[in-house]
Length: 93
Image 1 (cartoon, rainbow, N blue to C red):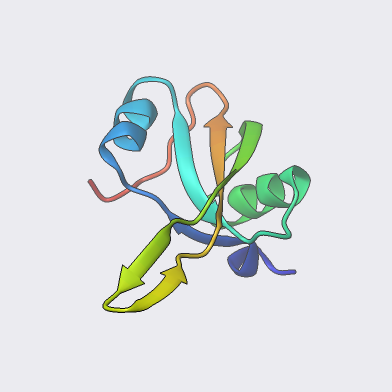
Image 2 (cartoon, rainbow, N blue to C red):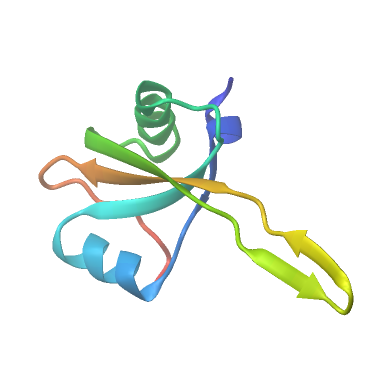
């Protein structure tokens, strides 16, 4: 897998913005089949930073209803990436 297949997007939420401003943690939406080593290499390749730690979790999808039909949103895999000291990713915010 190439780096851009592993890292789908940088998630910008209020909580994740507060984390990267204070403690250099960034939240990424990643491919479900990617492991921590692949995520670390992909972030280092794309953003040219040194990754200290990667934590992953799967956010379960929710049941949704549109009129009379039941459906479900997909499960999402997210990664919290901690950067080394002095490292920073430009988020455009």
